[in-house]
Structure formats: structure tokens, C-alpha cells
Amino acid sequence: MQRWFAAAAALLLWATPCFAQDLDATLKAAMTGTQTPAVGLLVIRGGKVVGQAVQGVRRNDGSRPATMNDVWLIGSDGKPMTATLIARLVDRGVLSWDAPLSAMLPELAAQMRPDYRTVTLVQLLSHHAGFAHDIGDMAFLNSLYADKRSLPKQRLDYIARTLKEPPEIAPGTAFRYSNTGFLIAAVIAERATKTSYETLIRREVFGPLGMTTVGFGPTHDPQLIGHHGGKPIVRAEDSNPLMFAPARNMHMSLGDWAKFCLDQIAGGQGHGRLLSADSYRRMQTALPGGSSALAWGVQASLAGRQGPVLTHAGSDGNWNAIVALFPASGDGVLAAANADEDMGGDKATKAALMAVLPTLSVAKAP
Image (cartoon, rainbow, N blue to C red; front, top):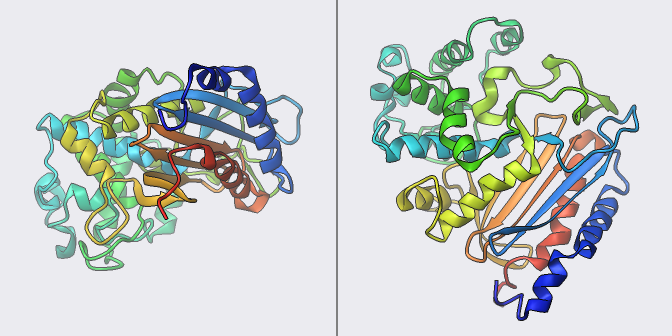
């Protein structure tokens, strides 16, 4: 932080409204050439939120403007939150990082493929468990939209079927991005605590951090609405089933998302609120030979800025969200759009993030 703010006058400059105006201009430029209805941006410097802005409308068939308090569906950017929940339970001794899946889900051990029986929580949360991106039985997946059973029962059924499908690669051998690993980890937590994932994560993560705007599943009017094919998406079937929350189905305000990110930054500096030092280290340190930690991607640098950098991106096809955190300097940026690739939402969030990156961390050494 001191590298950038050499005097109190510089601190005041970042705190004045002109910084927000700069972010407004950044968002307008980022949206240019896209059909993105709305984009939001939040900037963290030295472990504090120093700027936030939104541009655009909640729905492209109306004129109601997006606001600072609106919620955004962040897709897979919720995975680090699920990993944090699991880490809390490990810290408490309820779960173990290295226990085999057969011991964590004994009722499913006999029917799961032998390949999966030794899979661990570390492998599940780092995308090293060998699972495909999602279940192969699409008819079953689509049936979940009308399923009236409890979400934990739906998740248990989902993973029981998935554990009978062959792995894409041998578990433990390489990275394969998968939503399934996070759903399995959530079921393990539910079975161990006899509590639903939704209740657990509110109690263990959102509550302690004061995150009050979090919801599960798609947003609804009069909030921001996701878009696809040039129009607002209002059918539940056009997003993920509600049971997918542990992998990629939560919405929240940028401010609440930032509260989680600030704790991750603090944890990287040795004073996080939620986890032990070992759990923050596990979450933020890439596995040997790769660039994936527990949920986070980890890079040595990003766009010429010195890392390590924690990164993630998320989408359900109707939204786009992206985050980059620099724990060593206490800096970070979060961007979200209520549209995805087909309407340029991904281009808008990336452009906004890239425009802010030169002001974060320090330049990478030559």
C-alpha cells in the first residue's frame, strides 16, 4: 500500500467522488460495442473498498437503472465460498482434508466406482478428482427443475448417480474443471452436520462476515435480471437448478461479495476472520505442478502486476462475473455483468478489470 500512497493527499484523492467518476467512465468504455445491459465494478486497495460503480439498466426491455445495492449472480465465483465453508468444518475437526470419499460417504461407498473411493476433499475442491464438468445424464439434470424434494436430497441423488459414471481422467492425476466436486463436498458437509448447505454457509460464512444480501438461484424483478439471446431471462429452466448453489448458483451485492474477498485478502496476510492460517494457505497455494488451489486459480502475475494473484470467473450463461485478488498488497477488483458471451458480458467485465489492474499491486519485476 505504501508503494502507491506516499502521502495523505494521495489517500484523499482516492476517497473523493472523482474516483467514482473515473470508474463510471471505465464502465461506459467497457460496455461500448457490447449489448450488455448493466455492469458493476468494485475496487479494493490496501484491504479496503476504495471505489464502486454501476452502469446500465436492470432489464434491457425497461429503463430502471442498476444501483449500488443491486444483487448480481456470480456463478462459479461462489466456489471459493463453498471451499471456505468446508475449511471451517475441517478447522473444527468435523471433516478431514485427507479422508477418503468412501469414509466420508459410507452409504454410497459400495455403489461408487472404485476409482473414486480414495478421492479427498483437497482433490474435490481443486478440480483434481477426475469428474466431468457436470453429470452426463442430462434427462435427470433437467428433471431437477420440477423436483419438489429438499435440496439436500436432490444433491445426494445427483452425486450418487455421478459416482457411477466413469471419470474423465484418473482421479488425482491432473486438473479437470468440474462442478460435481463442489456438489459432492457440499453433500459431505450436509451429511456430517445434518444441516443443509444453504443453512451451513449462511451460518459459517455469510453471517460472520455480515453478508446480508446473499440469495440462492436466479434473481427476480425488480432486481437486476440476467440476459441471453438479447432478452431478459425469466424462466428457471434457463439457469441452473436450485440445488447447484455450492457450485455456481448464488447472487449477492458487490459489497457483500467484497466482504468475502476482503477476508481472503486478510487471510493471506495472516489475520483473516474465518479460517486457520493453514486453511487460508491451502486455499491460496497452488497444488504442485499446477495453477489451481482450493477453488481459486493462482497466478504469479496478471497483466504485468506482481502476484501471487487469486482469480476466478463465473457464469450461468446469463451473467458474467470475474475477480482478481492480490493478498500481498491487499488489492483486488470485482466485476459483474447481467449478460454473458452472446451479448458481450464477458468482454465488458474483462475490459473493466483490465482497465483497473494497472492501479493494483506493483509492476512485475522484469
